[in-house]
Image 1 (cartoon, rainbow, N blue to C red):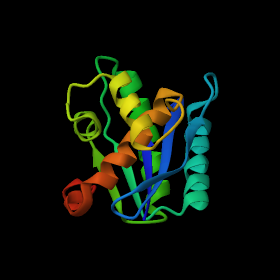
Image 2: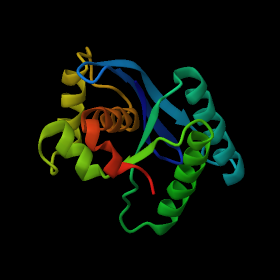
Image 3: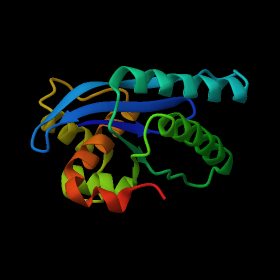
Image 4: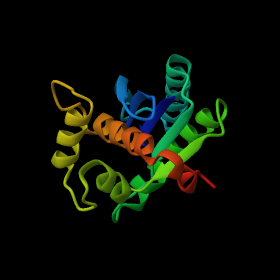
Length: 164
């Protein structure tokens, strides 16, 4: 099974693709789909959509796992990230109905054993779990990989995380 993890973002949308047989995980690839400041919103969203389609064509995921949005007080940023997430979801559902979502706390819990883990602890565990030589960069890609790992570890309980 191939899982594509997505960390939605407007400037950087992180992704991580993992293949699993239910016991072992193999990292297939990771990175970001990037848009540039100053580009009109509609073109940034289109770029994210096309980038997501390219990832789906490259990895042919069985399941796509999204990190749920979390934003503080900046409503404008939250709306833009929400729009980016929507575009990514639409691109994913064109390929599969197997879409899942996990909160940042659920991901931290699954990766480190603590829902209060900091970013560095999560990154160290991602590196260790996948036998990587270095911590994946940028942070958005590491977060997406962590989301994919969380989904791989969900096993039979994954249905409770299916997007509704």
